[in-house]
Length: 157
Image (tube, rainbow, N blue to C red; front, side, top):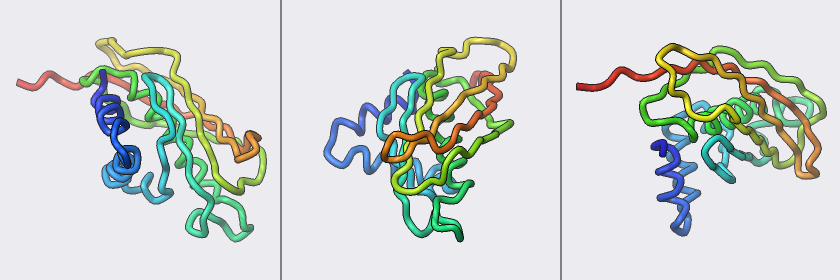
Protein backbone atom coordinates (compact mmCIF):
# COMPACT_ATOMS: atom_id res chain seq x y z
CA UNK A 1 0.00 0.00 0.00
CA UNK A 2 1.30 3.45 -0.88
CA UNK A 3 2.25 5.93 1.85
CA UNK A 4 -0.56 8.15 0.55
CA UNK A 5 -3.14 5.41 1.11
CA UNK A 6 -1.70 4.54 4.52
CA UNK A 7 -2.07 8.17 5.62
CA UNK A 8 -5.60 8.36 4.23
CA UNK A 9 -6.73 5.17 6.02
CA UNK A 10 -5.03 6.12 9.27
CA UNK A 11 -6.58 9.58 9.39
CA UNK A 12 -10.00 8.71 7.95
CA UNK A 13 -10.83 6.64 11.04
CA UNK A 14 -10.83 9.64 13.36
CA UNK A 15 -13.16 12.59 13.81
CA UNK A 16 -11.70 15.49 11.82
CA UNK A 17 -9.25 13.03 10.23
CA UNK A 18 -10.14 14.11 6.70
CA UNK A 19 -9.81 17.75 7.72
CA UNK A 20 -6.27 17.14 8.96
CA UNK A 21 -5.40 15.02 5.92
CA UNK A 22 -6.47 17.89 3.67
CA UNK A 23 -4.51 20.42 5.74
CA UNK A 24 -1.37 18.28 5.44
CA UNK A 25 -1.86 18.10 1.66
CA UNK A 26 -2.21 21.89 1.54
CA UNK A 27 1.02 22.32 3.49
CA UNK A 28 2.97 19.78 1.41
CA UNK A 29 1.69 21.12 -1.94
CA UNK A 30 1.29 24.88 -1.36
CA UNK A 31 0.03 25.83 -4.82
CA UNK A 32 -2.64 23.13 -4.78
CA UNK A 33 -3.47 24.20 -1.23
CA UNK A 34 -4.35 27.67 -2.55
CA UNK A 35 -7.70 26.37 -3.86
CA UNK A 36 -8.40 24.55 -0.55
CA UNK A 37 -9.23 21.17 -2.07
CA UNK A 38 -10.97 18.48 -0.04
CA UNK A 39 -10.35 14.82 -0.74
CA UNK A 40 -13.82 13.26 -0.73
CA UNK A 41 -12.79 9.69 -1.48
CA UNK A 42 -9.53 7.93 -2.18
CA UNK A 43 -8.94 4.33 -3.23
CA UNK A 44 -6.02 2.79 -5.07
CA UNK A 45 -6.31 4.20 -8.58
CA UNK A 46 -9.35 6.35 -7.86
CA UNK A 47 -9.76 9.84 -6.43
CA UNK A 48 -12.55 12.35 -5.94
CA UNK A 49 -11.67 15.88 -4.86
CA UNK A 50 -13.75 19.03 -4.49
CA UNK A 51 -13.47 22.68 -3.61
CA UNK A 52 -15.94 25.40 -2.77
CA UNK A 53 -16.72 28.44 -4.82
CA UNK A 54 -15.35 31.51 -3.06
CA UNK A 55 -14.03 34.92 -4.05
CA UNK A 56 -10.37 33.80 -4.07
CA UNK A 57 -10.99 31.29 -6.89
CA UNK A 58 -13.24 33.53 -9.01
CA UNK A 59 -12.44 35.54 -12.08
CA UNK A 60 -13.73 38.92 -13.24
CA UNK A 61 -16.75 37.21 -14.88
CA UNK A 62 -18.03 35.97 -11.49
CA UNK A 63 -17.31 32.32 -12.25
CA UNK A 64 -14.52 30.01 -11.08
CA UNK A 65 -11.18 30.81 -12.68
CA UNK A 66 -9.96 28.45 -15.39
CA UNK A 67 -6.65 27.81 -13.65
CA UNK A 68 -8.38 26.92 -10.36
CA UNK A 69 -10.26 24.23 -12.30
CA UNK A 70 -7.05 23.05 -13.91
CA UNK A 71 -5.38 22.89 -10.50
CA UNK A 72 -8.23 20.72 -9.19
CA UNK A 73 -8.04 18.40 -12.22
CA UNK A 74 -4.26 17.99 -11.94
CA UNK A 75 -4.56 17.23 -8.23
CA UNK A 76 -7.20 14.54 -8.81
CA UNK A 77 -5.11 12.79 -11.47
CA UNK A 78 -2.01 12.83 -9.25
CA UNK A 79 -3.93 11.40 -6.29
CA UNK A 80 -5.61 8.70 -8.35
CA UNK A 81 -2.33 7.62 -9.89
CA UNK A 82 -0.11 7.76 -6.79
CA UNK A 83 -2.67 6.10 -4.50
CA UNK A 84 -2.18 2.85 -6.41
CA UNK A 85 1.61 2.90 -6.64
CA UNK A 86 4.30 1.15 -4.60
CA UNK A 87 6.35 3.40 -2.30
CA UNK A 88 9.37 3.41 -4.63
CA UNK A 89 7.50 4.98 -7.58
CA UNK A 90 7.69 8.68 -8.33
CA UNK A 91 5.97 10.78 -10.96
CA UNK A 92 6.23 14.23 -12.45
CA UNK A 93 3.64 16.09 -14.46
CA UNK A 94 4.90 16.72 -18.00
CA UNK A 95 1.73 17.86 -19.73
CA UNK A 96 -1.72 19.16 -18.94
CA UNK A 97 -4.59 20.13 -21.21
CA UNK A 98 -8.13 21.07 -20.36
CA UNK A 99 -11.37 21.70 -22.18
CA UNK A 100 -13.84 24.09 -20.56
CA UNK A 101 -17.42 23.09 -21.36
CA UNK A 102 -19.56 25.32 -19.14
CA UNK A 103 -19.21 28.25 -16.73
CA UNK A 104 -18.18 26.94 -13.35
CA UNK A 105 -20.10 28.13 -10.31
CA UNK A 106 -20.70 26.48 -6.95
CA UNK A 107 -18.85 23.52 -5.49
CA UNK A 108 -16.66 21.77 -8.07
CA UNK A 109 -15.88 18.05 -7.91
CA UNK A 110 -13.11 16.34 -9.90
CA UNK A 111 -13.03 12.57 -10.39
CA UNK A 112 -10.25 10.46 -11.84
CA UNK A 113 -9.74 6.74 -12.36
CA UNK A 114 -6.34 5.19 -13.14
CA UNK A 115 -7.13 1.83 -14.69
CA UNK A 116 -3.50 1.00 -15.53
CA UNK A 117 -2.60 -0.24 -12.05
CA UNK A 118 0.78 -0.20 -10.31
CA UNK A 119 3.94 0.73 -12.16
CA UNK A 120 6.55 -2.04 -11.94
CA UNK A 121 8.72 -1.15 -14.91
CA UNK A 122 12.44 -0.59 -14.94
CA UNK A 123 12.18 2.20 -17.52
CA UNK A 124 10.28 5.44 -17.49
CA UNK A 125 6.65 5.23 -18.48
CA UNK A 126 4.24 7.90 -19.58
CA UNK A 127 0.71 7.79 -18.24
CA UNK A 128 -2.26 9.83 -19.39
CA UNK A 129 -5.16 10.30 -17.01
CA UNK A 130 -8.46 12.08 -17.48
CA UNK A 131 -10.26 14.08 -14.84
CA UNK A 132 -13.84 15.24 -15.15
CA UNK A 133 -14.98 18.25 -13.17
CA UNK A 134 -18.66 18.52 -12.37
CA UNK A 135 -20.80 21.14 -10.68
CA UNK A 136 -23.36 20.59 -7.92
CA UNK A 137 -25.98 19.53 -10.49
CA UNK A 138 -23.64 16.83 -11.84
CA UNK A 139 -23.03 18.66 -15.12
CA UNK A 140 -19.53 18.31 -16.58
CA UNK A 141 -17.98 21.79 -16.66
CA UNK A 142 -14.46 20.76 -17.68
CA UNK A 143 -12.46 17.73 -18.77
CA UNK A 144 -8.68 17.59 -18.38
CA UNK A 145 -5.94 15.23 -19.47
CA UNK A 146 -2.75 15.03 -17.44
CA UNK A 147 0.41 13.43 -18.76
CA UNK A 148 2.63 11.99 -16.04
CA UNK A 149 6.12 10.52 -16.39
CA UNK A 150 6.74 7.70 -13.92
CA UNK A 151 9.84 5.82 -12.84
CA UNK A 152 11.26 4.06 -9.81
CA UNK A 153 13.40 5.75 -7.21
CA UNK A 154 16.86 4.35 -6.73
CA UNK A 155 17.16 2.04 -3.76
CA UNK A 156 18.54 3.78 -0.69
CA UNK A 157 21.53 2.18 0.96
